[in-house]
Length: 546
Image (cartoon, rainbow, N blue to C red; front, side, top):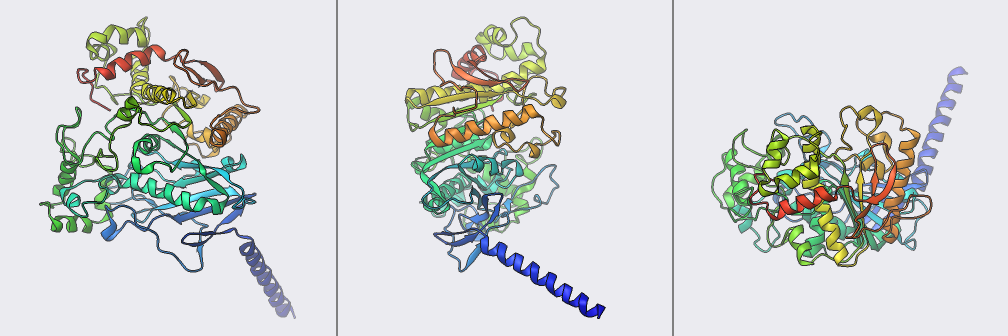
């Protein structure tokens, strides 16, 4: 009798579990895309769709080819798990491996939308382009989850794009193959393909394809500038946010496919860099046989632990994004100076102490740094250390930050003002109390991301539980970002006023070291003014380049 009772109990439990699973499956959100149905999951009033392919796997013959269309599928695609990250070396890479969870098959996007959204909702859409120096990162990082954005009334989309040599690579054999194809910038092509997918499919998820904001940090912020100036990206987005993305030439698009000595800091062409990499693996020649050998390399060999050179003093073997002349036809700086950028709302800024050390200059003292500016030396000294009281570490940190991110952001802001586009600038300087000892000069690179997403529990190196002040700052920043996506204006009920930027007073919001949000004239003006002069005279400055 006991055995019978136990058997009936097990049957009842099994039946209940089965019915529960069926009920969950019955309530799972299902959306019909142009390629087929996708089935996501609903969490706390938010529907999440993970790992949706926006292009075919770029493997085999499609390695180093523009993204190819996805093939339609039958039935429902399970969109409850993230797809692979794009192949990368990962933190503290081990030679001959790629990071766990990464793969060459990686062209997926993830999407957060209110559970009650319908094709008639026409919600604003925000598309996040992750950072990582074009060699790392992912669209599925918990720091970049879209729940808080969606709670504030927008659809959030995160995308993967090819990285490293799989994403940015040139070689004479590739240039000869399919000569009418775009070449080199496969990561940028992926970003465009994802935006095209959004234009065709986002309405089915409740989004408005005519109200798309692209935003990104670091390499993602640089990508925003590139997409603004790539002709084939025109019309795919309508507002932009660049977080620590610069806005000038940099070295990111300064290397043409096949022209030597075209960049004052990097003399070799992207094709030469590709040939350097091929020679490292014993591949000579520029014909189809050489290309076949390159495509036969294992993905681990292509990633090559993220190495940019063949040994400490060896030739360059990784190019980064390329000024190829077809897809990327000019730098952000040349486009902005010529007024070729589109007129659309802009939000732009950076952190207050992004990085120290020999990032821009090899100078080892303040005096050496100032002297490298030649006739501008005294002006640089007055802007950065007028009383001679600051340490070299503080000066070099502020200088690196201004040269790479701060002043180029101002250049961009001025260019958009010239188009009479609504423009908003920020500086983020908050440092958690437990991090002040290692970051005494301000917020480091990427510090603002978890605040903009309001994902403070996913911060690296921070206490598990945010303080009340941190929660308030994150709430306000997330509201700013979502308000901007909705209307092109970050202001709204309950948040401190964010003034429009202007050339006269250069008003902005400054998130101070203690986390307070203040509207003010840009306190970095004198530094930016001399950096601007330095850029105009950059060929004479003894700088290593950026």
